[in-house]
Every structure is written in structure tokens, then in C-alpha cells.
Length: 347
Image 1 (spheres, rainbow, N blue to C red):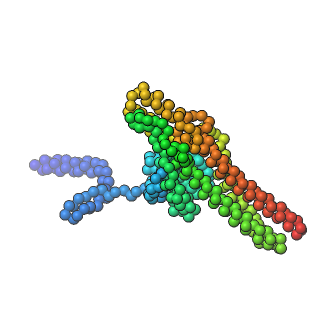
Image 2: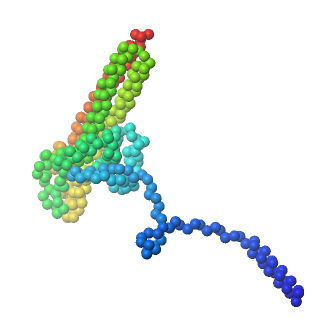
Image 3: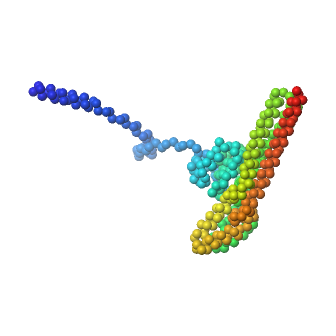
């Protein structure tokens, strides 16, 4: 009897030793954070929502009919809405704040001119940071000018009816996207001219002070003024160079005709509802019957006159910027000569 109890006791001890050697279970992961929503009687538990990622920025939507609204959109929303690549939004970001770009995309124009950063389509403009002090004059000009412009008409109907040039087409203004671009260039050129005038006005008192007394303080004022002129010259040069780049390439200018492409797509969609044989004939015929004057800049054939309206507009602002650039160079050269002369006399 005693032997049986001893053997049982040994087996129990060995079992306990073996059980002690078993690996401990892995620690449990903490349960997800829950919060009670709804009324207390509902007692519903739902996972706590994640915090929204940053990146939303303030934009103003302004359509061709003059309607506008302020929206806060994230990068992905803008990319989907305007059908542009992500790299175009980087161009409008702070890294490229002092660059100048006018880029044509399939359905949009990306405009980065000084403080004006916008995405323009055939139907609306998306303007970044519209409440900035420098941008407000541009917003005001959009509100004053765009609603009063005649809007483009869709040539022909879905049923393939009369497709002659619409009555009064001779008075049609520039396409919507070029109206926006023209206002942007006007505001930017005016802003740069104003800056040049202020620097030029401030240069004469500084030079007069240097003429009376060649001191360290007065010399520092002259150097500071010349640095400001150099920075302003670089800004003017960037806008001027971007316009010159467009003027040198008719294909790039043709790609900026967003309304023309939009109307052609509308025509194609309308003709697809009719007979296939008549569709191809009527589409080709109606497109080529539109003249290439200012009124015909919406839908034209593919000859060199297609870009004439845009070319004339860009040429005018190129000349204005060229004049601004020459004025800065003239003031800078005058200051350098005066500075060298006064220092030489004082020595």
C-alpha cells in the first residue's frame, strides 16, 4: 500500500515539473479603443475614428458664369477633380514659390505666376490661397470681368441638325482659360511694375545721401537697394522667360486651347448618337468651317493660325515685361556708376 502511494506521489510531481516547463502563452494585444455613440439607451460601441491626415488647403472655385465658392480640399481631391498629375501640385507648392510656369495638360492649365497659383479648366478656375493680400486684386478682377463675357456655344445638336456658325459668333471673346490667363498676367505685370517704381523712387534719396556723405551706413543702404533690384529682376525674368518659351513653340500654345478641345469632345459625343456615316462627315466639316479669328479661337482647324489670338496676347505681356526688365537694368547700372564714382572721389 505504501509503495503505491509513493509511486502516485512521484508521478504527480513529475507531471507538475513537466507542466512548469511548458511555454507561457503570448501576451494579448490590447483591445481597440472604443467609444459609446448615440444615446445612452442605445449602448452601441464603435471603434474610435482615426484622426484625419493634414494637407487640406483653401481653394476658390470660380466658374465661367461668375459663381464662386471657397473649399478646403486635400491633394487627392484636387488631382481627381482637375485630372492633373501629382507633380503639378508640387509646382504650386512652397518649394516652387518663386518659379513661373504655364503648363498645358489634357483638361487643365496649371498657372504658377508669382503669387497666382491656379488650375484652370475650360469651365472653372481653382485658385490656391485666394485670401492672401497679393491675390485679392486677382480675385476682384475675376469677379468684375468674367461674368460679363459671352460663353462659348456647342456647335450643332445631338440630333445632327443645323451646324452652321452660331449667330453672333464674330463677337465671341477669347476662350475662358485665356480670359483667366490674361487677367493673371495683367495683375502680375502691374504688381511687378509697382515694385520697380517703388524701388526706383527710393533709389534717389539713397544716392543723394551717399553724394553728401560716403559713410558705412549710406553704403549699406545702396548695397541693400541693389540686392532688392537684383531679386526683383530675377522674378521679372522668370515670368518673361516662361512667356518666351510658349511663344517659341506653337504646339505648346495649341495645347493650351482647352475650350477648343472641350467643344470638340462635346461635338464628338453629340454626333455619336446619330448615324456613323453622317457623324464623321459633319464633325470634320463643322470644325473646319469655323474661322481662325478671335471668335473662332474656340474650335478651329489645325493650321498655324490656331494660336494667333494667344500669341498676340502673350506677345503684348512679353513686351511689357521686357520693358520692366530694362527699367530695372537701367536703374541698377545708374546706381553702380554713381556708387563707383562717389567712392573713387572720396578716395
